Image (cartoon, rainbow, N blue to C red; front, side, top):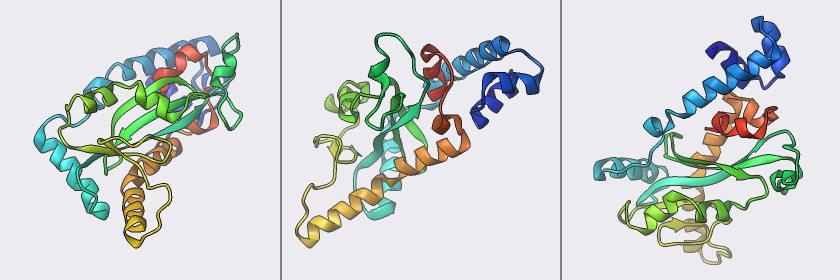
Length: 220
């Protein structure tokens, strides 16, 4: 069952093709993939978590500081689109993103080593990145002081907050340009993280050909 699922995730091919290779029919392949991915996703809380202790937060902050001397950052946040087939029905267009294809817009936060510490993968592709963040638990935790004076770095699609720093819109001085360079280079791990995941599991890039209610577990 695990091998069938891994082949599906690693190739992004049709269920029928995966089943033929493994000697099972299409319906069995679908059930196996759903069962295994949901089992794996159920373990996410044990492996995907924000740094809670002071020592852990300081370690994450040091990792980002070493990139370009940007202080107090414990995570880089961004969203990426995971392509899906049209879900059909009255709400199908909610999943069509600005690039014209159907997707989930997945938000993730990672550390300087590309390890994901928070993920949100339930929003349709038409949802703006800032909307996802505004409705996330991690935003509420930052506003409630759970992470002390530490902060996140994001791109210009997010609004500036005391705990979320984005690039300056129109830098004019040398200091402002240096700030933007440091901010962009320091948040780069999240871009690399998405790239690594989509190369390792091409289904995230080529498209998930399953019913929409089975997609979230694969994204996790």
